[in-house]
Length: 197
Length: 197
DNA sequence: GTCTATAAGCAGATAGAC
DNA sequence: GTCTATCTGCTTATAGAC
Image (cartoon, rainbow over all chains, first blue to last red):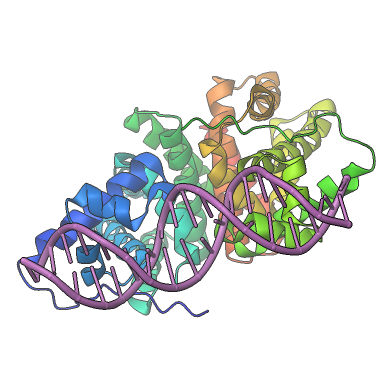
C-alpha cells in the first residue's frame, strides 16, 4: 500500500552508466511529450532508449522513480533559469516579471506535453524532501523578487502567478501556439494586472 | 488502433435505467475527485455504484465513453452557469468578468480533483462533435461578452482567460484553499489586468 | 552490466446463467 | 436487465544466461 519508490537505484552512479540513465530519461521524456502518460510503460521506455527492461530496472526501481527523477531534472532546469533572472534584478517590477515569464515560456513551450504530464502527475507522486524543496525553491525565488518590489503577500502572489502562467502556457502549448513572444506578452499583462490591482 | 468509443451505449435511455447510469457516473466522479485517474477502473466504478461490471458495460462501451460522458455533463453544467451570466449582462466589463469568474470558481472548486482530472484527460479523448462543441460554446459565450465591451481579439482573449482561470483555480483546489471569494477576487484582478493592458 | 524470457498480477471486456 | 465467472492482453518486475 505504501509507495516509497523515490530514488534512482544507484545513487552514486558509475561514470559510464550515466549515459544509460540519461538515455532512459530522455526516452521517457520524449514518450511523455508526444504520447502522454498512458504510453509511458517501462517496455516502451526501454525500447526507445535502446536498452532492455532489465537494464532500466537496474537503475530505477519502478515507473514512479523514473517520473520522480524526470520531475527533479525538469524542475532543476527551470529553477536555474529563474535564478539567473533573480541574480540580475531589473529596476522595475515589469521588467523583472517579463524576464521571469520569458524564462517560463521558453522552458514550458520546449516540450509542452512533457510539462503538462509532469505537472499533472507530480502531486500524486511520493516525492522526497529534496524534490519537493525544488518547487518550494521556485516559489521562494519568485517570492523574493516580488518582495524586492514591495509586493504585498509575496508568497501567495508567487503561487498565483506560477499557476496563472502555467495554465496559460499549457493551453497555448496544447493549441500548438508557437508565438512565444506574443504569449509571453499576454502572460505578463495578466501578471502585472494581478499585482497592480 | 482507432478509438471510436464515444457515446453511451443506449442513446435514448429507458426511464428506469437513468438511475443506474447516474449512479455509475456519480461513482466515477467521486473516484476521480478523491483518488485520481489511476484509480478509475471499471471494476472500481461498478463497485462504488453498487452494480456489476456487466451492467456498466451495458451502458458504456468502455472507460473512454464513461469519461466522455462525464466531460459532457460537467461541461454542460458550466456552460449553463456561464450562460446565466451572459443572459443578464452588467454595464461594466469588470462586473461581467467578476460574475463569470465567480461561476467558474464555484463550479471548479466544488470537486477540484474531478475538474483537474477531466481537464487533463480531455484532450486525449476521441470526443464527438457534440462534446467538442460544448467547449467551443464556452469560449464563444465568453467571447461574446468580451466583444460586448469592446475587447479586441475577443476569441483569443477568451481562450487565455479560460486558461488563466483554470490554472489558478486548479492550483487553489490542489492546495486545499477554501476561500472562494478571495480566490475569485484574485482571478478577476488578473483577468482585468490582461484585458486592460 | 546487459540481455532474454518469463512469472505474476491486474484491468478491460465479454459470455452466458438467472 | 443484472449478475458471476472468465478470458485475453498488457504491464510490471524478476530470474538467470551470457
